[in-house]
Structure formats: structure tokens, C-alpha cells
View 1 (cartoon, helix red, strand yellow):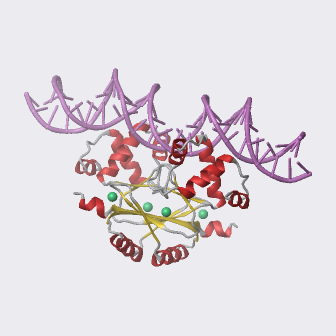
View 2 (cartoon, each protein chain N blue to C red):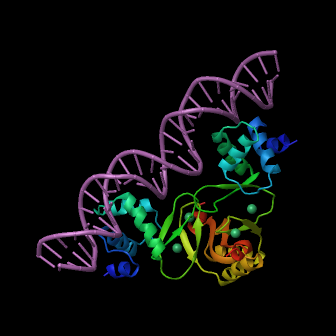
View 3 (cartoon, rainbow over the protein chains, first blue to last red):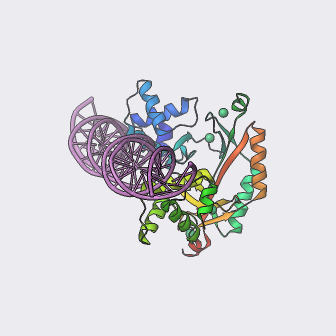
Length: 138
Length: 138
DNA sequence: CTAGAAATGAGAATCTTTCGCATTTAGATC
DNA sequence: GATCTAAATGCGAAAGATTCTCATTTCTAG
Ligand SMILES: [Mn+2]
Ligand SMILES: [Mn+2]
Ligand SMILES: [Zn+2]
Ligand SMILES: [Zn+2]
């Protein structure tokens, strides 16, 4: 029962929060905007307020249940946190998203922060390109 | 005369465009939002419409005169394009911005794109941390 | 110098996200 | 199980950033 996760995170196990968490866990799509979550829930007959979706996703982020990304600058994209950090590579044609981890890059980032006198807190790395499918489609 | 740059870029040498370009070239601050540019121009007695600032900065970006960044996800930050790519490291306390280039990271990014079947078009990398000043201040 | 296309400015409109507040609910207590 | 209260919800209003509309102005080619 997911109410465990919520309790652990210091959040009351409310109906909207359970719905949203369940949805995120069962969705085959990993990266979604608040609007995506909202509409998907509506489509599956679940009533939730849009403001609540925004609030809950932000709370989930603070609780570490979810990670927020800024793929294109404007709106936020959320993803269930699986515990391990990863970065993203995105197709600028079709919007496909792939994930990767590169230890060399991770290490260099830490070194660069150090070299510049910073204590590193976080980083965000996106590679933009054209995926194999879109390349062959010309 | 900067009107050269504009003509070359396929842009008519209008008064607002010249003002904005001149401002960017003479500003000691390298990274600015559209609003920053707008207000700074007003403060120095130059009249320009905010919508025009947005339009012109976008045109400059298309023309390669300027680069757009998304430091925090929401609003765009612009910077005069000096021809050479670089990435950024930002202080989350004071907003300080430093620039760097790391050939190892650049090379790894290209390799990762290749490994995933993508042809790389671009990338964005931001390191967030606490700068030396902010570390010592507490 | 003139005409026509392109650019500007002002405000309205849009989009995403947050706020305010009356109403409902979780869950601790009796 | 009934009650209580702080916390959470949902709605619409409001916000901030950016874009759009369109009447008016300004380049610049001829
Ligand atoms: Mn991911
Ligand atoms: Mn820079
Ligand atoms: Zn693609
Ligand atoms: Zn700092």
C-alpha cells in the first residue's frame, strides 16, 4: 500500500495524493508535466483539481519522491524518483527521451566546481539531438 | 558601426535593434533577461517597447548574435555570442555565474549521443553550487 | 523622394503556475 | 464509532513571463 510511502515522507495519505502517486507508479510514460498528470487522471475518471496536482507534485519533489526537470525551459516535467541520478538525451523532432549516466562527466563536473571554488549542490545536463527513428525518416 | 553586424545577419538596421545590440556589447553584465535589457535601456533614457526587446532578442538568437539560456527553468537569459561555446556554473545563494569549457565533457556528450543512436544537435549543462564568497559568509 | 514591406509600440491575450479562501477530510482523541 | 482540529482540497482569481494583434512608423530599394 502506497500510503506507507506518503506517511514516511511526512505527508498525510489523502485521496488526491494517493491517486497521483499510483498514477505515476503505473504510468508507462516516465516524464510528464503537471498538466499531463492532471489530464490523464481526468481521462481515467479520477477527479482531482489542477491546483492540487501542482501542489502535490511540488510536495513529492520536496519529499524526494519525484524529480523535477526543465527540458525546454518553460514548464516543469516530473518523474518518479527511482533513487539513482541520471541525465537525459532528447530528440528535438519527436520528443523522445532517453536516460543515461556517465561517470566521467559526473566526475568532471565535481572537479570543475572545485576548481572554481564552488561546493557543488546539483547539476542539470541535457543533450539534444535527433533520434535514430527521426534520422531515418529523413 | 554595428549596423554592419545587423545587415550581415539579414536584419534591417532599425533604431531599437541598434540600441539593444549596443547595450549588450557595452554592458559589463554578460547574462541578462529580456526584462533586464528593457529596464536598463529605460534607465539610460532609451525608449524601447518591451515586446520589441523580446522580439529582437529572439531574432538575434536566430541570427546567432546572441545565445539563450534557461538557468532556472522559467525565464530566458541572453548573452552576447562571442563565437565560442561554454557552459555555466551558478551560485544558488547569490546568483553569481561563472563560465567554463571542458573538453572531456564535450567529448563524452558526443559519444553518449552516438551510443544512443542520436545525432547531437546541442546540449545544455549547468552546475549549481555555492560560490567561495557565499561559503565563507557563514 | 517615394512606395511598400518590414518593424515598432501599446495593450490585450496566452500559458503555466500560484494564491486565497470557503469547504472537506484525515487521523488523533475520547 | 463519534468528535475535533489542523491540514488538504478545489475553485476561480491572480500572477509573471512571453507572445500576439494591429494601427502607426520607419527602413531602404528603386
Ligand atoms: Mn528520467
Ligand atoms: Mn555565458
Ligand atoms: Zn525522434
Ligand atoms: Zn554566491
